Length: 407
Image (cartoon, rainbow, N blue to C red; front, side):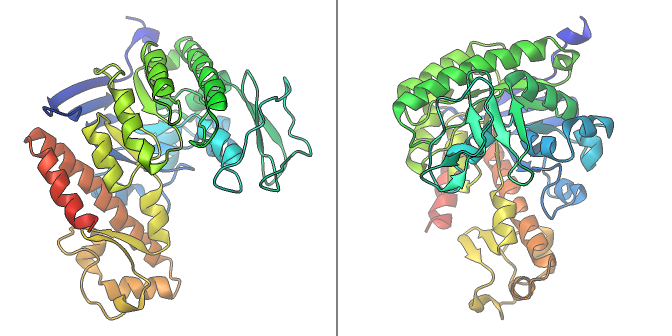
């Protein structure tokens, strides 16, 4: 078998849970095994904010996902390659992923400046974004989309960059993660159906182009490529996308989109009822405990989200009884741990009063300890979900956990 024909990823299902789509499995990559279900930490710029690789290894984190768009902007994908690739640059030697840059089509377009705005539909063949403004948001537009790709404007320098599916894959090849994603268009759930239809057709075209380019390169032998399912809140579009993406020769699949809370669980169920069962499924950008329980029950294997470190930096921490804000006055004299029974470094060594003091006095150690606790909380929770699938008690574990956490 030639190098270009080698499989970069293997997926094994260890146990399926009767009556659900939940499964416990293993994703084998060139840099190690991910035991699923698993939470994947977001390391946007080749770093998980405020946490070192040693800290992450100590809490049992298995994989990190970085952001292609941001690494292209700084330090550059070619610079990443010349420095030895993502693993060498950040000193993380376990499994890694990179997204495609497709989320920035949303975050700099429909999501820029407000919860929902619109993306220009009739972009020129080589979009320039000059002197254009989102008339609803009153902010300069930072992205335009055409048939072949998306143009991004650097909000700081004003330089315009044009991403095509082929360029996205080339950048991800240079960055060097174990698992990469096809270029897609992430849409707001409130976009009209006509635009969801247009964006879905574009995502499917870009998926095929991403796959063709990837397969033409030696990287296909050691980097796995996942296709991304889109379709917004529409059942027929979600199922159509699952059929289209699932029929392509991807190594695994991502479920994308910007979800409303009410749409998330049904969309995942629609999609995973169609996607090939023998390949891994990653739910992009989702990480709240209640959502991961639903994702696991409905057939998702891995999850990523910025939430544990984002909340931690601002003093919001996970506990078995729900989230607390450690800066509140009631914690200033509380000598208990953040979460009773938690075995993380923060809870073993520091009190709520001390962590509260650190946040209230703007000491950097506060966000570090809080982020570490939050990351440990989610990593441990999903590990317990895996154990519950293996011993057949997942539904009971879900009910017991959420009855306390959401009370």
